[in-house]
Length: 194
Image (cartoon, rainbow, N blue to C red):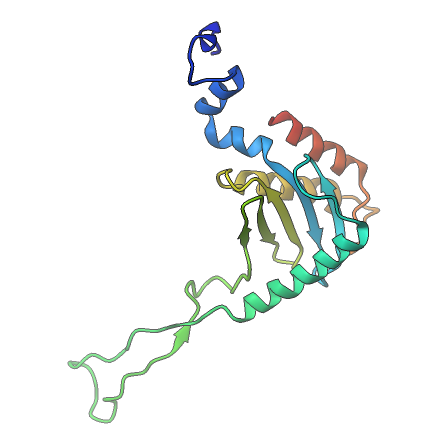
């Protein structure tokens, strides 16, 4: 609960700072989303929207180039994900005379999870977080680098996308997203968090 005592506390500049101290992660996430870009599985830009000032303005052509470039970099980082050596499978008590050579192989760090590629890129001015769906659609979220995890925001963006874009009978897969309900609900949800 906010009190007028915040005026007397020199550590707090405003009631907003008191709120931020009570709910640091949720509060930071709300005010730090700069932009959202959605890229289809072929690397084409299908959605772009800015929510807050903070990033340099780009032209439409720049966003198209950014989407294609990120798609390529993501594919390269996915293919160069290192495989870790497996532990040797030989034990002296069970090994047969002809099987003294240890069997070694390589596997991804999480064998049940496929290689994912670039997931986060951080600079002094922004953090780029990528979430790739099982169908290959990529969601790029640009946030403030001082914010905490953006998993909650990314999950909600994906939920809204599934509800208002993918369930829209007039939307064609892999085509630009032109869904007013998605825009409206996404903007309202992000504004409601600030």
